[in-house]
Image 1 (cartoon, rainbow, N blue to C red):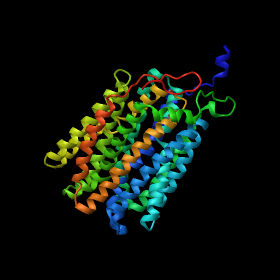
Image 2 (tube, rainbow, N blue to C red):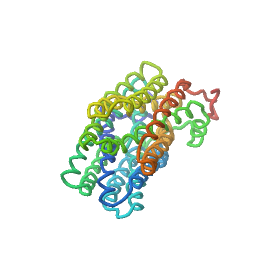
Image 3 (cartoon, rainbow, N blue to C red):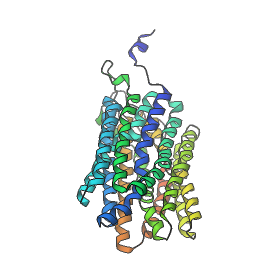
Image 4 (tube, one colour):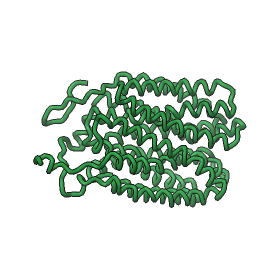
Length: 413
């Protein structure tokens, strides 16, 4: 046995990483995708405006983005297990607080800050860091597609479940039940416990956190990926939170909204998996540009067509194919350009841009609705941003960055 083999800690098996990572993302993302179902029950019961609810969910997305950076740093340094287990506890506390908060301020602290921090530790940036460290580059994009598809399956599974819980138990009890269910994430995190973070074998790092961050933030392709991800966040969170209310305003039943969100989740299983597979074969920048431009077309056609349950289901199915399919190619490009040593942190920064977009999409939806009585302006903004995102992703360079041996700084564009 060679000395390098002795010094290198064993990696987790691909099956173990994907099974545990997919189950964690299924629960974490599945629950959050159903938050739009609570907008009308909570605002009507509490006498709050839609903007109050939307602002809390907007803060949740911003909190997720901010804490995601630090969750990524901690996961890269100490391993994912501690971060995921802590996130599960915060998630349970946030859901309980969401049920019991008597004022919009406390609702924003729990549904917003606490759940946002929880999602930072239980979703893609941390899970993808484990994938990057344990799965070879030739299968990495595919594996990321599998994990993203699990999040989509979680939406398909959990949104109808949440709708059933609300109708049968009431919105408060439903949130408390979900708070208990989300604690299952903690034992699942044991399957992602890497021996390289156990303390026996220190990890060798060619760059400090500061060097890696300065390198990425100065690199044009990283900036373009961040700009595209801003648009992704704006579109999907606006639609996910406000579409149930939009459809009800158009005279459609709540069941149509529930089925629509479930269809988005179902078809996104195929969309994200396909994006991961295609990322192994064709340029990821072209995949991203196609996804964003297709979203703009789908939204425009949906608004132009007469609204009916059938048109909603077609829109949801097509949008589902494009929903989270940006995640595997975006994160695979980050790993491809910068390597895997600081992948969770860099993915966290990219995702922070996504969450700023999410904040704007969900808050602006509530703000403009309360002032104009319509979501039309936000829909039009979503279309324009989709075209912009398609254009900014085309110049992204996917080749590994060239570094001087010592400084670890970028050369060239």
